[in-house]
Amino acid sequence: MWPRSPPNHKEWQGSGTTAHFGDIVLGRCYTYTQIVRPELRDKDCQKIQEAFLKSFLSKDPCDATEQDYQPLIELANQTIPCNKTVFWSKTKELAHQYTRVQQALFTLENTLLGYIADDLSWCGDSGSSEINYQSCPTRRDNCSSNPVSVFWNTVSKRFAEDACGVVHVVLNGSLNEAFDRRSTFGRVEIHNLHPKKVRTLQAWVMHDIGGVRSDSCSSSSIRDLKSIISERNITFTCQNNYRPVRFLQCVKNPEHPSCTSGI
Ligand code: NAD
Image (cartoon, rainbow, N blue to C red; front, top):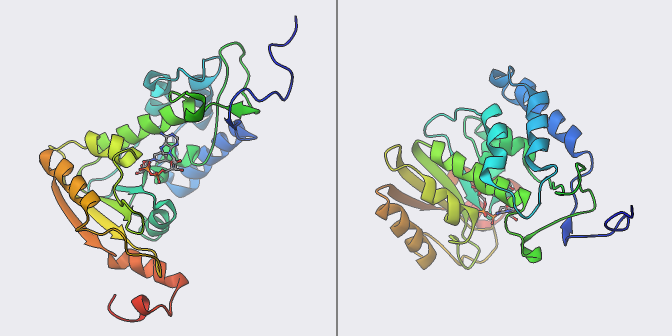
């Protein structure tokens, strides 16, 4: 029988599964559970790798579901202490620089599942049990239920549901809108905070050093965020250029006026 498509034919517009996906998943799982957070040393990384692969192999990559990831999520479950959750939107690098210094704090990527999957791409095909290393579907393929998007939506939702106490978000005040309702933070995370568990959302609106100061705590997009959070009976606070995070930005720009006075 002829193959359904010639070798190297790109079926989808997105890049294919990350080379050595299975090995990277296994390696990151061991690094995280043995070195980064040894309190999780008893997790079974072989089983986690197997569950991850099973979540998308031999399945239609435009029809991924939350259920596909349930076995993986259960194997990797982890308790994040209250007051230690950090969300971010359009501030990935800065938020992670901060949690690297403040090791008691957790972004999603500082949890086992987020650590394993960060920056990876993966998909399979319903007609074969193989990993597709050539291409994977994206929204441009009219395929919003692709394995990577459904994974991040599912684990982001779970991460928010599990949060308790005072939670934080690092936002980018140099964009036209520091808060974007269409982002994962705006679309998924804030709507899944439990008002009975989460007392306060503290927003830190950070401006690029030397960049435009386009959005800040008093801007309309942050007012929008405040009203969504307040309606959910969670207290909202906001700080521009939260000093501990500002100091990290200043490491790269020590001579900038905003770093030498008044910060
Ligand atoms: P953002 O717009 O800065 O997006 C963050 C990154 O995730 C970008 O690389 C973006 O392309 C990608 N991304 C976002 N939504 C996606 C989706 N549905 N499918 C595939 N990739 C997606 O900020 P955001 O959208 O608010 O997401 C950040 C928040 O959501 C964080 O609080 C984090 O907990 C979680 N999250 C993390 C990742 C990640 O790649 N590590 C991805 C999605 C969501």
